[in-house]
Image (cartoon, rainbow, N blue to C red; front, side, top):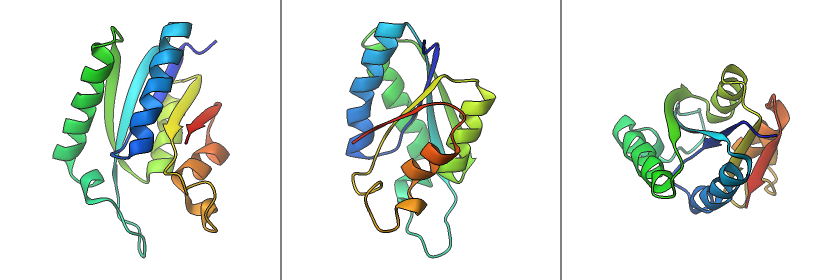
Length: 135
């Protein structure tokens, strides 16, 4: 059912929580796991987490995630890309022909007045495949 799962990650607690769900899905469906982290381009008028604009921090984040899954016997492919996170996530899902995107929500991302601007909401609306958002 889910042969390829894309797991976009960042430094948030929600992303770490989603890792547990991803591990379970990968084990149940024997899926290929692709971990993606996006070096965010600053948008005018928007605050960007400084840790997500540093290629060094992104590389460390990906290595930590790969190690976490490796400890559970799960092989992963890691990718680092640059750009607007929502668009990069959806483009990568399309390019890699994934069957499911699993991602954490920043909690308020789906319920804020500006929810149309949230990464999770944009991915839900633009994704070429199903999206599981883990709160």
